[in-house]
Amino acid sequence: MRKSRWLAIILMLCVMGGGVTAVSALPYRVRWGDTLSQIAARFGVTIQSITQANNLASPDLIYADQFLEIPTAGETPPPQPSPVAPTPAPGAAYTVQTGDTLSAIARRFGTTIAAIAQTNNIANVNMIYVGQILQINGGGSNPPPSPLPGANFALGGQSHNLSHKNTMAQAGMTWIKIQYKWTSGDDPALLQSRIREAHQNNFKILLSITGAAAYPPANSINFTAYVDFVAAVASLGPDAIEIWNEMNIDFEWPAGQINPAAYVNNMLSPAYNAIKRANPNVMVISGALAPTGFDNDRNAWADDRYLAGMRAAGAASFADCIGVHHNAGATSPAVTVGHPGGSHYSWYFLPTLNLYHDAFGGARQLCFTEIGYLSPEGFDSLPANFGWAANTSVSEQAQWLAEAVSLASNSGKVGLFIIFNVDFDTYSDIDPQAGYAIIRSDGTCPACAGLLP
Image 1: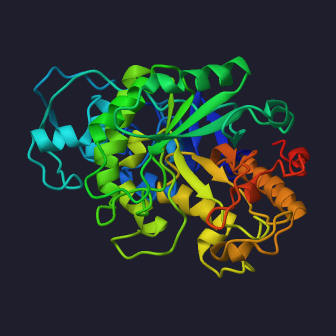
Image 2: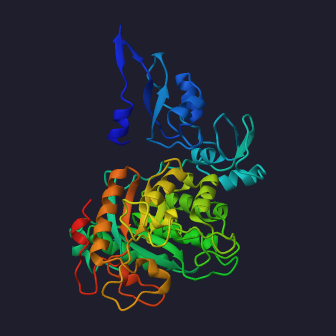
Image 3: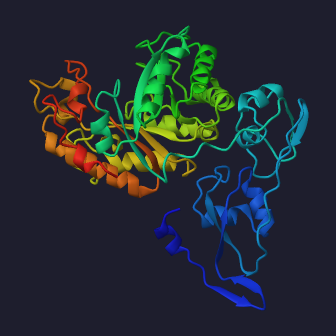
């Protein structure tokens, strides 16, 4: 929690006869396995009072190491350690408690929402009730989410390789992102050399693993094969894996089947569990969405609606970090008006950051797996659908990236910030990737000096 927030809740404590009297609130650090109902019972307060005191969007969304203010008065005993949830034997029964959610129960017992729902014939995973007895098949326990890199914030860049490793390091980058276009049947060992190269050069590596097919046909994603692939890749020792890419648009996910619950239940949840079994040190990042307001149910979902669906499906239980893209800015990241494209939040950095953070009630930090500003300077033309970037200069690109790094690193909401991109050289009538590159066509990097977080 940021220092400014703590300053706002400093308590006046009066020590009398060895007792500690809290005048307004007591800080409590959430432990792994805690539920809000357990914390409320421990301190003799209500779930509602804790929810209101901490502006929680939902009493079901708290997370390990979160700090809560416990509204109380009078003599307050020190909190006791959280009870450790039992590890059930196959077929063990669990009685639903106040404040429980299916995602929290699944996480506690090292299983999945889908597995519990199937075993207990639950039609709606959002509808369980206090006193309900659930059969829990499977044992073990999931490890807590992997810690984010560094103290609070890490910077990286997307590239195809480390041919500009010295420039990246001098700019403060400690991560490289490589996107892998997966096809069922691919050999995970293909990524071994990429992981080894990154680590030998003192870089951490994020592998964004998405589908190879553009506009994939219906029912074409082999979820089992994908989960097996990312689990095998995890065993090779990457530092992070992003689970798919921009699954809210039909370029990346079959048209007519775009659905956040399907993504969470069929891909994110099983991938998370498989990765953690293979290598619990790998950070799992939910696939970043295409930032868009277009929404017709079939070809695309607006990212704000898709985010709400991910949250309802329990995505926070199966991601260490929430993936974000911001690649259509044409103004300073500090402003919220003036973009040639209009007023939609996706054109602006801060509204996008806050939308993604607040969508999960702050339960997870954000990982910007693409953050970039397009400048056509030095190129002959700009594709028509990127016309909003026509007046962005290279110097503005450099300035805005520096501002975005500063805003993100100081927000307390962002753990990883991947610049899109370092050195791509493709510039076509369809995709001007080289216009995003911080190493420009003349070999210079005007943005590099200002990126140090």
